[in-house]
Length: 228
Image 1 (cartoon, helix red, strand yellow):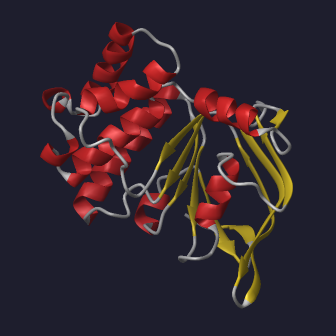
Image 2: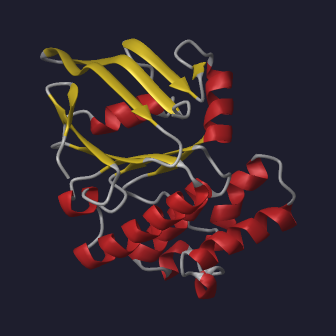
Image 3: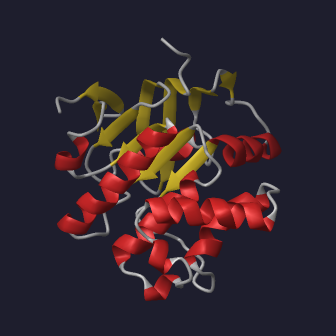
């Protein structure tokens, strides 16, 4: 078996609230292999977002180890964490967070430009991704001119623009109607498969979760295998 793209051991996350300490993750272990799509289910507040934020190096856990491509990232400084995120990780959220004044093309090209790619190459890559996601006729449209499903497909293209090795998706269809949810998930699934990216997808939608390679439920701060 290949080395995991993402390896988590003993992950702990506790929040301080007015009522005292609130442990959310109590020792989570997870390996995600190249090309594998893993589903993460659980009710609101169970810790799905906390797990994804820690895995994406956006939050510091209270304990445990996070390794990406064999490198222990647990004690990296902020500059190095940012470098790993830019080079290795793509994010898709429930809300698309597109820049409203930019076209779909420019929203997708932006991370490539930040990474130092020439504008022409960045736009060509962005156009190719958007075309693959069925948005060839919408590349010059701003987010307000796109439907919710189209906006989320633009967000998927943006997340995969830099060819990340790890994709983290937090309720990527949670803001969409059932029919649009299926269309958007199918687009994410197909493109992630084609690029061979390792993906962790948090969702409330058990029907979508059944299409993933493995599914885990977060319960009492631990991951438990869930039958698909």
